[in-house]
Image 1: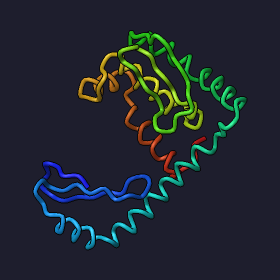
Image 2: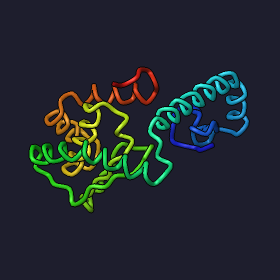
Image 3: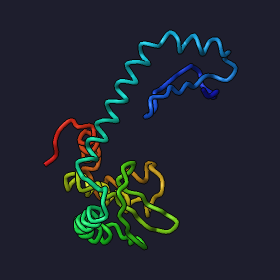
Length: 183
């Protein structure tokens, strides 16, 4: 439980199934416990949904086995072959060049841009996505070299260099949730 400058009491279920409660500063422990007790049904249902989403994510990423060194090497070679032409094209179009590009089997992010080092790391799991979704990730990370945060300027850059980025992001999210099989 955390006390925050909030106008109301709220709770959410995190990935491991724990209940996280946020309460306005000054609210009594008894009021908070009563709130949680009144919402036991919601907690049970929310835990089921969270567990199902986690299972879907695991099933999605398990489509690309990366448990052995040869599997990791092969996936890295494939994703590099997929991304390098996109990087070359969009680096020229956007006018930015990263200092280095790396590949790792990340499941929490598709790509990471270290603005200070001007380096980009891509997930080898991008191999599970359609090309338009991979292209979105490449442009996204390159735009971070011009704008580190996800502010209005960043979104304007994305609109300029990959106008269909919102559709690609939605598609990626649907694919990971198992709503349809990508081809």
